[in-house]
Length: 271
Image (tube, rainbow, N blue to C red; front, side, top):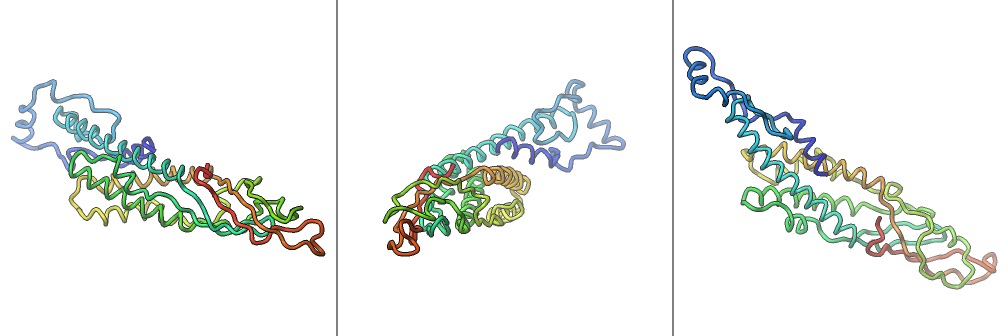
């Protein structure tokens, strides 16, 4: 995620100092030129170029390097905090309320720890400004994630083929032999789209004069969304299912489908 966030921020091609124009005309241009030593007029810019210097003047490249250091540390720090919260959530998340009828499983509700406190706990907060940025990102992504996971439902997938004809009065708990892929489930990810996340971050931050806040929030939203898209394609569930079967009578002798079964995804079941 760090590389994706950095790449998006770099794509804005921001120059610092912003809105700089070299003095021109007489005598401004000469005075500006005479103010610097020859070795100060043409210096190497910093790398990686999260922002660009307004010119090769030493004071501009020094400003650029300072921005690269501060912005880069924040983007890396908040990305690590988001990924750490994500990992903690996935390890602890469970799913209950899955209904099993014969081979099919449906419904369910995912429950996991909230992201915002986890992100704030490990995110950049060495200064009041960094704390405010981190809190904004944590609250918006945390709420958006909760909104998204509330939509995840299993839409009657044939996850338990053996339960279509079970040769016993009770089907004991067993893991689904057929993988339950997240992309096959109902899931509405509108809350995790870049425009939605960026807009809510800007609104929640409430400071139109905050340095580069629009670009910072868009870069974080974009990097997170790209990681989420990959995660969604790769993620699958392990569900423990079981339950009673109907009384053996025609046409169910000597086997019958599982009816009224219950499934759960235990913590650690999402891989």
